[in-house]
Every structure is written in C-alpha cells, then in structure tokens.
Image (tube, rainbow, N blue to C red; front, side, top):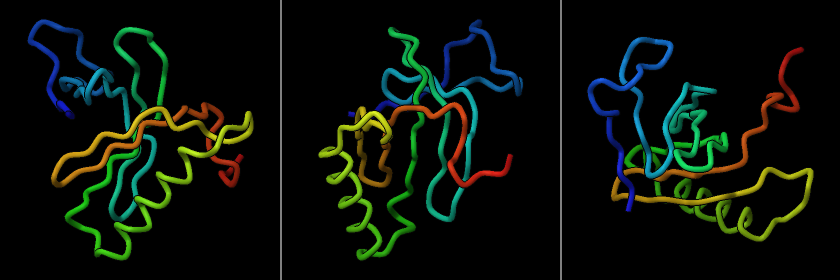
Length: 114
C-alpha cells in the first residue's frame, strides 16, 4: 500500500517553504528531474535516513504499450545486482500511479553536463 501524505503541522518545512510529501516510509526532499509521464524525486527513508530516488509515474498518461515497457523495466531491474548498476529497492503501486524506489546516484547522470 502506498501512502502519500503531507507532513504534520509544526514539522520543519523543506527549502521551498511548502510542507514536504511522504511516499510510504520516504520523505520527499526535492525534484531531480521531470519527463512527459514521470517525475523523479530525491527522498530520504524516515528510519534509516538513506537517500533514494523515487520515479513517480502517472499510469493514466501511458498507453498500454508504454505501460508494459515500464513493467518490463521493473522486472529487469529486479534481476540486476552489480556495483555499477543502480539498485532497485522497492516498487509501490496504486490504481493510477507507480512509484519506483532506487539507489540515489548523487553525482547525476552519466550523460549529464559537467
């Protein structure tokens, strides 16, 4: 089950001044990137304080072919275990949304600008 909530009143707001969101046990910190059907957020596990990247996909904006590709991506990520490949930690799903929790690569994309 996925729970997306705002932090309780009186908690510390994030750097933008708005109340941070939570996805499951993860507290959203900031947006790392956006695409046509998804947004990637930096988050922190509330207990372990581990930073993660959460890809949040709006399934209602995907056609069946693209949705199948996303599910295939998740299945492949579950099989991979290598120090140079981003680790998949957790997948959460609701009727309309898919949350893919992965290891956070703090140095950015391999193809990013310097």
